[in-house]
Length: 171
Image (tube, rainbow, N blue to C red; front, side, top):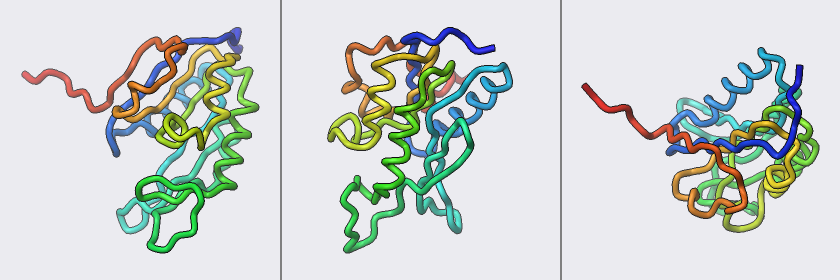
């Protein structure tokens, strides 16, 4: 019962660390599948050990398969791709890029997340940026940190920005 994929609407999900961006993407992907939508792309849940975030995996939203994406940066780490605090696994990045390159056509495209690697340094999920630009989806959910909202491509047709840090007005 798929929809007709085109260059669809983009909804940005933003919020600080621990706000629930990935959890929301996973729940919305599950809900979309329950309605018969074809879901593609990737979510990147955290890995915790003893209550501390020690890593990140990339999960294929079509198959459910996961691969290691990043781990906490340690002193003397030889990681070629890194951000503040994180060392990225080149194989995990390559695999994720292949997921995004083959995501279309789909009804729901999930990109969790576009960060400084992609939006500032031209690394990371470059295939996700291409998939968003080329279309072949009806709706895209894209996770972006608040501090990077100003560098999103102007050509994107952003339907809405959902800020998970925004608190409803109190009584």
